[in-house]
Length: 298
Length: 206
Image (cartoon, rainbow over all chains, first blue to last red; front, side, top):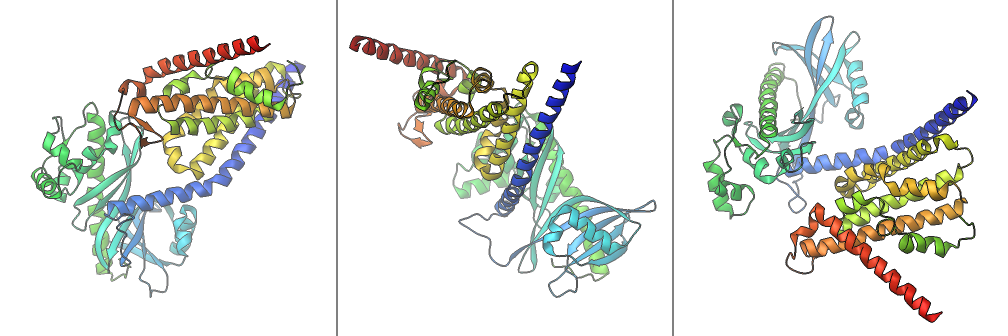
C-alpha cells in the first residue's frame, strides 16, 4: 500500500514537472510561431494576388480586413460586420449589424487600435463595449477586401471545410465580379499521393479564372485529365498556348484526382460554397452601406 | 559498468563501436524510412541529439528519486517532454524545416535508442558521464543517418544536399523505402569489416 502511494505521488510530481517544462516552452515559442503563421499567410495572400518577391505589390495596394460576427440579442439574431472606417473618421472601425433579411439593424463606431483588433479576444471585447450590454457575439470569419488606388481589385476569403479525413483549410481570391483568381491549401491531412494532390498545380490551377457563373454550378467529373490541359496547368507550355488552353477548358467541370474523387469533390464544393455565400453576404452588406451612407475604407 | 570511462572513450563508443544504427541496430525505422537525403538525416539527427542529451541528463539528475517500478513510464515521460519542447522550438524558429520534418520529430518519443541509453547508462552513472554518453550516441545516430542519407541521395537521385553532382539518376530504387534495408545492411557490413581489419592490425602490432 505504502509503495503504491509513493509511486502515485512520484508519478504525479513528475507529470506536473513535465507539464511545467512543456508549458513554459509553449509560452516562449508561441509568439514566434504566431508571427511565422502571419508571415506565411501574408505570403499566400500576395501570391494569390499575383505578387511575389520579384514583383512586389505597389504602394497603392491596400488590404482591408472585415470580420463577420453572429450577434444574438434576446432571441433575435443579426449578422454583424466589423469594417474599417476611412482615415479621417473619428473611430477607426465601425460595427454594422444587419438583420436576417439583409436590412440595417444598428451600427456603432468601434474605437480600438489596429493591433488590438488583430487579436481575437481584444477584438471581441472592443466590439462588445461598442454595441452595449445584452448582446452575445460569436466570431464567424475574416475576409479581406483588396483595393488599388481605392478601387476594389480582389476579395480574399479564408475557409475551412471537411475533407476526406479532417478539415481542409484554404485561402481563396475572387475578383470584384467573383471570378475565382486562385486558391491555396493552408492545412490538410489528406492521404499522401492521393488526396494530398489537391496541393498540386495541375489540380489547383483548374480552378483558376473560373467565372462566377461557372463556379456556381461547378462539379467534378471522373474522367482522365487531357494531356494538353495538364501541360498547360503545370506551366510546361509557352504563355500564349497556356492562355489558349485555359480558355478552352474554362467552362468545364473539375477533373477529379485519380483515386481521390472525394477529396476533389469536397474541395470543389467547399470553394463553391464559400464563394456563393460571400457573394450573397457582400451584396447585402454593400447595399446597406450605400443606403445608410456608412463610410468605409474600401 | 565501470566508472572510470574517459570522455573520448564515451564519445567514440557512441559513434563507432556501439553506433546505434550500425552496431546496436536500434531505431531502424527512421534509418530506413526517411534517410533519403542528407538534409533529412541531419535534421532528424539534430533533433534526436538534443532529445538524447536532455533526457539522459534529466534521468541522471533524478536517478535517485525515480522509483524502480515505474522507471520506464518515467523515461517515456521525460522523453515525451523533451520531444514536445524540441517540436515547439523547431516549429517556432525553423518553420521551413519543420514543415518537412514535423511528423517525424513527434515519432522520436518511440525511438528505442533513447530509452535504451536511459535504461543502460543514465540511470546508473554520473551526470557528466551520462552527458558525454548521450552526446556520443546522438552524434553516432546523426552520423549514421547522414551516411545512409548521402548514399541513398547520391545513388537514388544523383544529388548531394540538393545539388546535382552526377547529372543523372543512377538507380531510383535507392530512394524507395525498401532500399533502406539494403543500404543499412551494406553499411553494417562495411563498419564490421573496418573493425575486423583494425583489430587485426592492432593484433599484429602487439
